[in-house]
Length: 401
Ligand code: NAD
Image (cartoon, rainbow, N blue to C red; front, top):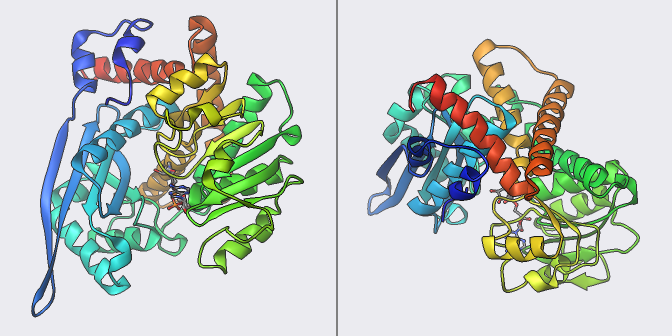
């Protein structure tokens, strides 16, 4: 299913059919078989894709997902999401994504590095010209990005690199920083309440979830519940997020057991909190559990954590949902700063990165809210309208339509 309902958008924004046709299809799909001999009788073989959804606003930006069940279709949906996310936050990138169908947990560090080198080898035409600019996604991280940088010799080829090799201080925290900032804006402007009076529950305690929780706690919000694949932690007085991070890091990466009170992921989603932040995987809230949701504000830290059916039911109950392309755009904004730094050779202080994230997200939030007020629709539709406005400008500027 398409990320953006172009028919709904077209009812608000006059879109020529040619523009709709462009956004309704993929620009280019590269499908390769990555093969690597790892011993005299063993060859690893992994289907590998790069999908370009739309590059009218700039090179395709999006992460590399190394996961055992990643598909071309899923990669395409994620590429599409990136087109709209980049357009909404105003960074000069298009939408792309890459997939390597392989279980990252079943290979050694050494083999993973060799696979990434092979990836650069087979995808060199895409990477060398800067047509696709990768970043980390599930199963890949800063080390893999450093390997890509090493193989291509250009810092702007890839973002999400370690700070020691041209990476950006603050990139790691950027998505969570943005989710927390957007949560504060939504609480203040939609609920007319201060953030330090809010209770929050965060699903997922990985990169996005943990940093979101840290920044929310710094703002004075009470993060009462957090969960991950190991289970959940709950304290009605508010969790000590710094201690929880230490615990999780020293406990094989899990939050389970941090508090006496044990909760499940289902309990977390159903908590009577002000703000619920699904920041783990897609499809966390579906028709199967939507009736249990009590929070009045849902901020999509993850990509597509609320499916379309659940979205419509929640809206029907008057709940507000801050869509993924707005809520988690802090990461791609920081990627833009890193890309710019790679091109220019500048060194960017963390304060500047955080300022850029907050300014761009505030600007996008204001525009989305203005469209929502005007159209009396929902935030997701308004965010899609603002993205499409930007894409239409670029499509016309480049004489594509
Ligand atoms: P991550 O792998 O660092 O962390 C994922 C967390 O979610 C882990 O704590 C894991 O235990 C938990 N989790 C996974 N499946 C779960 C389930 N079924 N139930 C409960 N917990 C579960 O990943 P991340 O980088 O934090 O990304 C999380 C989401 O945010 C993904 O949807 C990703 O596409 C999206 N996203 C990430 C970034 C980024 O910069 N990392 C940017 C934008 C969007």
